[in-house]
Image (cartoon, rainbow, N blue to C red; front, side, top):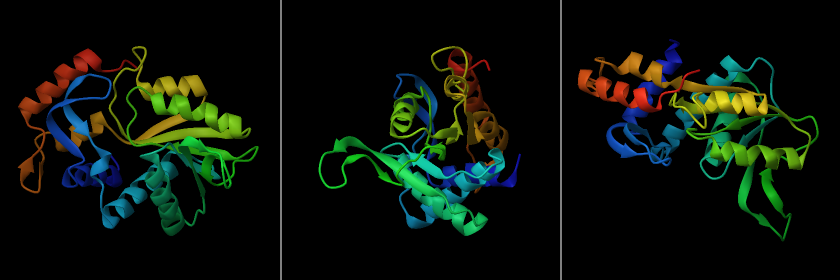
Length: 225
């Protein structure tokens, strides 16, 4: 596993973004772990987060892209910090674009803020965590309506490795449906590999009992890619 992945997992734990216990997902699944990206609240956290996203993009997409698109609302700060990190660390100047929840009928109007999409623009969608893929399925038609863009892919922070509408994982389903590459900074397998019985700041985050609970959850909801 690459060092930046290990650093990101520990960063999520330290930021209380990755937590373990008893939770309910948006899709109604009772889960022993939860990823709450709303816990990123400081400038230093956002700066680090952007670098992790930028590294994931550089490691997974060979050609440069023109635009990072962030679905409202959580995707908005993500494209901002990721574009800054790409410029600062990789000398890659990428435009940003994000949507409004409701179209504006005055001023410049329209659904989008940021880069005006043009035919041929190479676009990557930046999202926090995708379980069912709802926001992506809403975003792609909006992008295609705005221009004949080249949708290159989707990057998320964590792949929960859960089945979506079929037995396949949500990221695989989205890749198949929209003919694009999908990737995550880290997967659930990588999180378990790094945290299982491995103390972080003197505390074991995933002990044998928690590992068993996660395994039981995955036996029900885990994907078959």
